[in-house]
Image 1: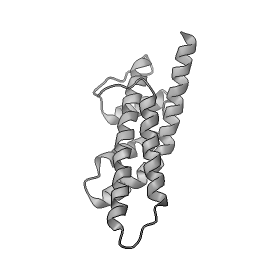
Image 2: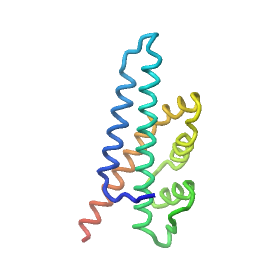
Image 3: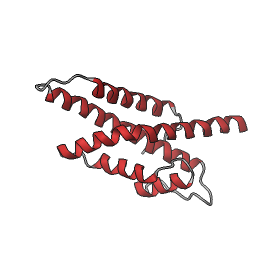
Length: 146
């Protein structure tokens, strides 16, 4: 998996997800518009997958940049290891939420799972924004130290 240094990709992915969620929430659905509603929810789920993937890449980059005694994360380890290492490095504050997001990411083959994933995607934005802020601060501090 490619690593992401720049927070711009994460910012764009989150903005697209936020827009999709906002549109899906505010759309006026008629009784006969179930297919349109399904399309909007599918767009949210797709953007959730994209944003989560970008977050994973950002976490890996941050962990590899800050590897040391407290962090011995290696590329190729499990997603659970990634989340645990990210929590230890204070990149994320809700590791259980992140594990649930990853689980939702892998369980969208059925309609009930897709509905749950849509619901998780709406919760994901808060944690993803927190990650973006943390990474942006680290990036700023790295530039100041150089």
